[in-house]
Length: 374
Image (tube, rainbow, N blue to C red; front, side, top):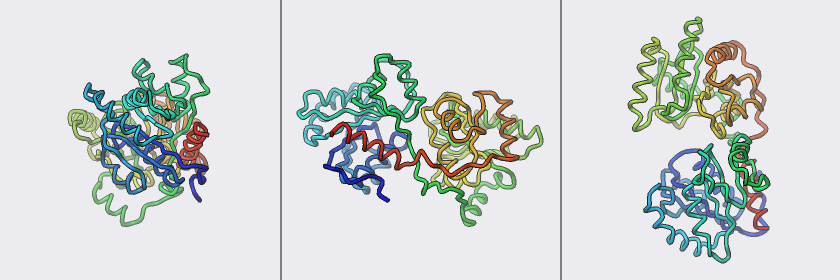
């Protein structure tokens, strides 16, 4: 079934984003670009480039290299080039997904005739202030969660609620199929690579190598489970990144101090996250700073895997709606251990996901474009 209906007329939509290497905002830009092309619209993305560009172009969008996201005075020198590009492209919609690109777009479209409609998406809980406020200047402002909408309205009293639309990010259920189990070949290769993870329930905490993701809490959780006689393993998935050596060593020291060297594995980012989630007894979301959404929660639940996370931000919002048994108060390590033990013993059933699907996000965004250009 097609994700979008055939358009009454073809639109030209330009999305601006700093780069296309990785991240939720970048992935959303590709997903909307794909939906635009499928619906018969013209899709253009302007960024400094990155590893996602070949996929973007293979799916029918045009990519223009222009660094609109570097926090440098030299970026402002590119304003004239951006205005020239927009004058040539004659877009119906200019959609900015980050603060500096939004400032660039805001000034570049001034004086253009016809003037394109300006749309923004707020992907994160940015520090309130004048610099961040540019993302609230769109004719329509997309918030990726109700948590984020509430945050914006509470910090910017001048923001008209009618301009803000909650369009959560979504996942493709075909990419994270309900009840998926990896094949024997993958399992054999995985446990051959990481033999320490075999033989006991697996706890997986996905997240880049930053203290905010709660790696220390995950290690302490495993330590306390061990003290209570509950055997488990811990995978810190994606924590090893360039430039994070000091933080990784800090984690390794904590692991050694707790006597967990044989039970914890740290890895760089991997492409087989679906299979890793599928063999996990618990997927952890322990960020000590509230996040705007929580795609990992949706991915794991779509696979029918339990999620245990702190009840704040977008993660708390999703768990409250979809898996209340997985919510614990922020930084309450005692409750975290108790709930982990309960879920490892008997996890409540997880129904098939009926919301937060990729097509829902694509359809809602294209409908917003249609609304502005009708």
